[in-house]
Image 1 (cartoon, rainbow, N blue to C red):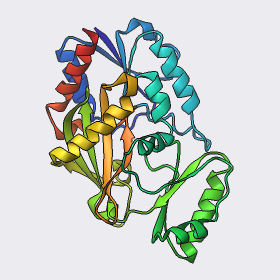
Image 2: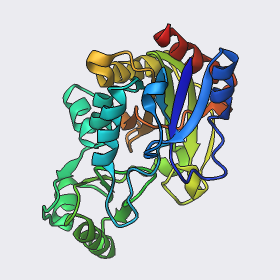
Image 3: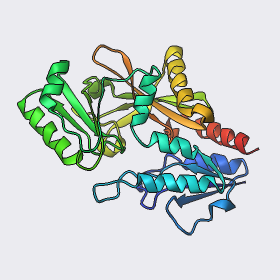
Image 4: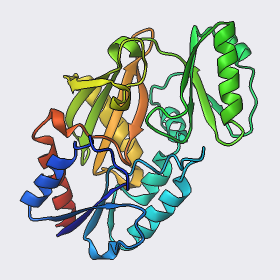
Length: 297
């Protein structure tokens, strides 16, 4: 059994979280090759499966744009040659934040959101004031790792910064505007991780004091945490909805946070290349490896 692990050309030296997964696959008899997704020399058809993992360069081309179309075309091409996890249709759907709109339409709890297509104009002060928000949060509809995000206060300086930020981005890409959920600064986000539709483990991600970014790129910390049966069940419903006809997806991560009233809301549902925090559960790599082996049996 040969398994390709799709990564990127310039993976940070400190990124080692997937190493236990590689070991678990090898313990189960797999030959594992970690390769760049955009390497033209890779013969994808020579593998029994391709597992998308740290392909973290498709959302930023280094010139103010992204490589999403190229990445989707790659996924579709690879899927024609071997088993791809997760499927190309899932990659297309989940690499654009409109997936959140789809899930909200199906009943997922989502913070109020203003969806702004590329080229749109908006009076930020008017939009925020009429909704009674005490602050706002802006992010691109395509992207990850807090790229292009901005939090701002509902005051003259904040509105000016937000207006300028959207002016710089909306000319080339779609954006979204939400209320800023202040509890993220102290409570962070809770990530619930699933393999083959079954809950595996949960992690709490906490930003540095005064920040909102929960990625370790910005100094945030993460730790294992406990979640309730009701929270697991709610997240499992979201994972099933994300899978659609491909459910259960091989892997998924549901990122939840609390709004100002304490309501549990969906921040992201990552089913393409999420960090799976293997470092916080030594049995988790084996769970994913077993799930993959079952798929290939």
